[in-house]
Length: 197
Figure 1 (tube, helix red, strand yellow):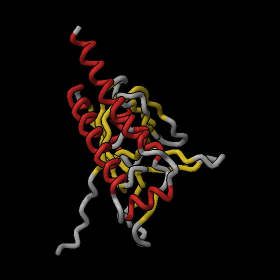
Figure 2: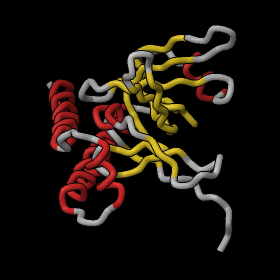
Figure 3: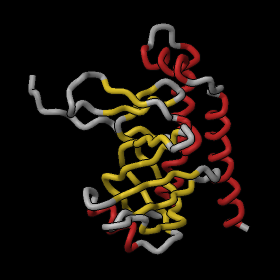
Figure 4: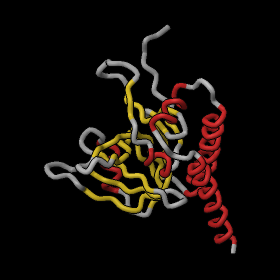
């Protein structure tokens, strides 16, 4: 068996659930152990995969470039992504892209506690790619399916440690995420009807 670390699967998640994923943990005490965000539907995520409309970019760095991107999903949920000197490719994409543009982002969830104790969740991008509308549409359909699968597992699982952890950490009805998935699918239908007219 090789000891080469494998990359974690990038989880597909809508903004509503991602922004509620305020609890993070490590599986070991090793300094280099991956940090996971616990999704409220009971799955751990070390990497996520999102597609949406980049609506705004801004250099929020003080001494060096540090780019913030605002990415809006089909049902209006918002992801914030931040890239600086350690993510040069992603930072240059945020610098060069002209919003609005459809983008696919693979990155790591990051949490940040504000002075008033709120926890904000953002994405530290590994890659940002400009994509077309059909790629965005496929992502919405697949993410809705994965979300509904996770909810079903959450509701039926008896002895799943991440589901148990989510039940303990979050007092959030998982039905919210099912609604987000359905709204996202409905927004696609509405868009395609509008284009067909």
